[in-house]
Structures are given as structure tokens and as C-alpha cells.
Length: 341
Image (cartoon, rainbow, N blue to C red; front, side, top):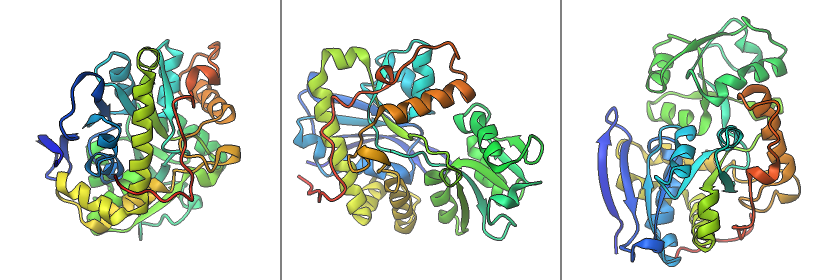
């Protein structure tokens, strides 16, 4: 049975906000909702494929995938029960937990963050040394904006060496193309494919190249749901891991799945986004070959950065145990070949 689609709205003639559901389930415990971090983009193709290729159906789950409007809102939607699970930034989850929000990260699909400075080829920015005296656009309240002084310090730059201007999410790429500023603070898994789709070439300066290695986005679930229905969360994680890695191993097939639901993107652009997204799957250390697994050291690093840059109360007694759990996960490994059901 084909998946059912409900189109909600179109934004700028490109990405559609839509709801993707698996084959009709039995309702109740077999129905789940997943909210993404933002509206549909090519980087979300693995989520679409996980439903389209039957991974959730194989677990007896009817999953509806919903667009988001920022990781903080996604975390809020999870804890208020608006959705069952969310895909949200690890740092945003930590800061919410510091405010008393009872949620946990249970499946780290991005072992590394996609934070970057993204410019255009031929604009005079080829490397980090070229940023001095340039103008960079960013959204007002995001984690990257709050952490920009951290990146500046790594570069040996001080306030004023780079001019930072505020721009809306929708205006960042048009403003860059129009020459209103020289680069964007952005998630490169989103902006690089978007620039590619417009026939331009992006220059990507990854924060990880500065030694800023933080957890990226993962699956967030409320403590209440983990207590009341842990087996459903385990089923969800099994399906999500298999579907996500299937898309990583079959980017062209995943691109076709995405194109069925979202118009306006060429296959080349979607596969670029998928490969960039999948390049963040694996971390470092003893859990490097275990997809989705977190450890105390990585969680503590996020807590420390949140205290310094993201508004987490310095007196907070938040610990890694409060932040994540691997108990609902049967991790897959890098050398495993995934077959669709």
C-alpha cells in the first residue's frame, strides 16, 4: 500500500510542508508522529524513505512525519504531547532540560553537528583566514549565533573583526546571492544543497575543522513516554535506524522518494544533501561504529557549551544521565548492509 500524503502549504514555490504517513495502522499504540527540526528540505530525505520503503510498517507502526519550525519548538511539541517524538538539536535539548523540560535524546542520528560558515565561490572567501572584515548573516536567536564568539575565539578574532548582521531564515540565501553580505552562519547540510539547486557553487567552512566537535541532531522523546511506552520507542528507533541508513546506502533511491513528496529539487541536489547528512552519522571514540549511540563525554561537552554560550544556568546540576539514554536503542554498525522490507 502506498503512503498517504497531505500537502499543507507551499513556501516560495520550493519545499512543501506536508505530512507523510505509512500504511493505515490500527491507531493507538501503532500510530506515531515525528516532528522534524524545520520545514521539509533535501536533508530530510532519509526520513521520507524510512516511511516510503516500509521500515516503520515492518515494526507495526503508522508514522506521520511533520515539519518543524526550529529545534526549540520541536522539543516543546514533544514535551507537551503535541507529537510523540522529535528530531532536534542536541544543544537545544540540553538548554530545554536546564529549564526543567523532561525529555531525553534517545537516538543520535547526527553524531557531529553541521554548523558552518557558507559563502559563494568567487566571493573572496576561500578559507577561515578570509573572514576578517567580511559581513556574515545569521538568524537572531539560534544556537549558532550564540556560539559564534566561540568560533571567533578559535580563529583568534575579536568582536568587530567580522561584521554580523541579522537576517530571517528565508532571506539568508537570497541576500547572499544578491551580495548583501558575504556569507551565512548555516547548517551546511541545508544551505549547500540549496545554493547548488540555484546553479551556484558554495564554499563551506565547517566549524568541526576548528575543533568544535559537538553532537548534532537526534531523536527526542519525553520522559513520560519513555516511562509509559518504552517498547514503542524501541520499535521506532529500530525502524528509524534502518530507514536512515538505507537512504545513506541508496541516495538515488532516497532522492526519488523525496521527489514524490517535494517538488522543485533536482536529483543531484538531493543526493548532495543526503551524502552531507550521512557524513555526520558516525562520531569518534569508543562508540564511533555504533549508529545513534551517545556517551557521557559527548553529552558533558554539550552541557558545558550550553552553560557558556546557550543560556544554561551556570548553577544547573544537569548531568549526562539527565540528557540522554541508550537504553531504547539497538545500534547498527557502519559495515551493515540494510535491506528494505
